[in-house]
Each structure stands twice: as C-alpha cells, then as structure tokens.
Image (cartoon, rainbow, N blue to C red):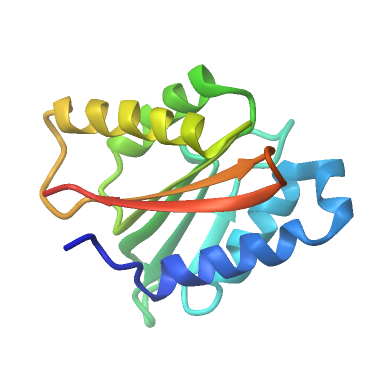
Length: 162
C-alpha cells in the first residue's frame, strides 16, 4: 500500500496550492514558498528560513523544529526544505542536502514543464537516497513540483523508504 500523507504534509500541500493562486507569487517565488511553508508548520513548530544575501545558519533553505518548553533546547528536527526552481540538475543537487538530514520530513520544492519530467527527477532522487548509507527505513520525502504544462499547478508526491 502506498504511503499516506500525514497532517504536516497535507498542510504543506494546502498552503502551497493556495499560495500559487495569488498571481503575485511569481514575482518572488522563493519568498512566497518559504512563507507558505512557515504558515504550514507554525504552530506548533519553530521555523527559520535562509534569506538571500544574508549569512545562512543552516545547510537547508528552511527548517522547522520542536523546542523543549522550559529550556528552549532543541528536541527534534521536524522538517528540512530545499527549494530549487532552476531545473533538474539543480533540484537533484539540492536533494543531496535533504538526504543527510535526520528530520521527520524532507521537502523538495522544484519545477518542471510536465509531471512526467518531475517523476523522472523524483526517481533519480530516490535512487540516490537508496544508495546513501545514511538512509533509514521510514525516511519521508515530500516532493512539491510546480508544473507548467498543460496548465500551471503544484503536484505532490510522497516517497517513504522501505
């Protein structure tokens, strides 16, 4: 049986789809995407995203995490995200950073002309994940692809390592 989207993954889908209905999102796609993910995870998680031109604190474009309520200590990494809207090679390159994360969810936001092209990228990404020695059973990868043809929309795929 195929893996089922969990509540966080469904929230991400809802927020990205809603965001893409705003015609202004194409003016600054990276900012709009990070904003949509922030809305999907907050609350209950803390959220931080890299800002172009600023020094990055994390190796990913965005993260969401849980804190220990009293000490504000880091409890768990709930989400890591890479967003690459620059073609297949760049998306597959960014995916490498997702593989090393010990996070509950790994999200790759990318773009392609067609769903078939997106599925080919996902196959290559998952092939890389299967070959990576740090991959563990149950690792979750959510792929969110902006499809341009035949009509523009976000399409979503979930892959869970068996």
